[in-house]
Length: 100
Image 1 (cartoon, rainbow, N blue to C red):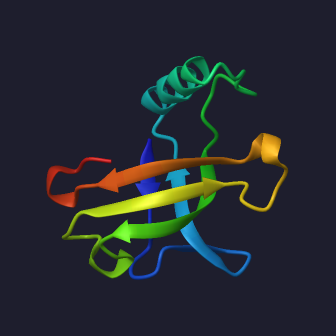
Image 2 (image 1 turned 45 degrees about the vertical axis):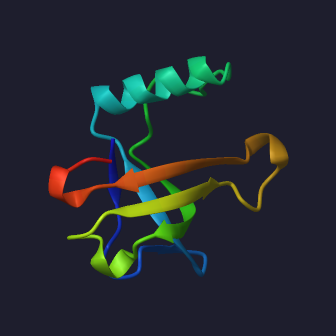
């Protein structure tokens, strides 16, 4: 799975800023399977969708320096939707090591 943030401000959807996670194929599918097992939630599909958007709040670092400096982000899925579909995760990015 790859994470996409057009610099300097992140991805915009419905007037809000966030991140877009994009599938890279089998690795993303495996990640989805592990998450569904860990949280005992049935995934709607065994395939990670091509792209999923989530709202994001930088905790450390900024979108403007993302290409060169580490960043820690709190990510919210379905923030305005029903509680049963709400989720949040933390994403750490280390560009020098190409680690998400």
